[in-house]
Image (cartoon, rainbow, N blue to C red; front, side):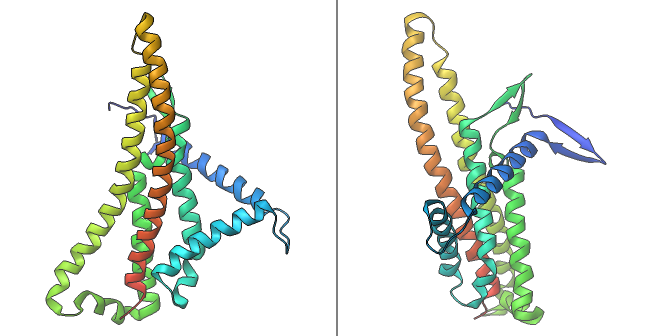
Length: 240
């Protein structure tokens, strides 16, 4: 797809406003949602509090499955925040895309490989950082030569492949979904006369079905991203 985005340069850095606006919108949505769900907590939870507690238990369960020991207690909030951020960003472009003057001003931030690679980089840096925190530098380095020293190159390559696959899996699924959605919309408005009416109705039905399916895919991809992130972090944090 030949897409063009508004770019702003500041102090030698280039900012894609489509990404920035989507990230800002997702942060506002997540803050308002969690604030609304967490208002007036009680000993006997109501519907909103139950929903928030279920979501927290869900992300805590992801962490515990990878890090069942005391190490996992540090990563509950991280998994909760990461899941909400990825999930909301996966959905934004499905319901609202803004194109003005031949430029795309708004769509899912996770449909850009730069954003997904940035998220994967955060996971990569935190996993190595906490690997040193929990195991010490000597214990952290020992993992690269275990069980035998000649596995060092393979272990180093594994770190790179984990980073790349984590980022590109999310990007590929969300980008492909938005491209197909755009093609369906173009198809719906491509006909004329009677054929145009048929193509519009058919395109509308297909778009509704595909949007529902894409919401499911976006949720699954958020779950997979958080799950793999905690697994990669557990490999560094938990020593044999």
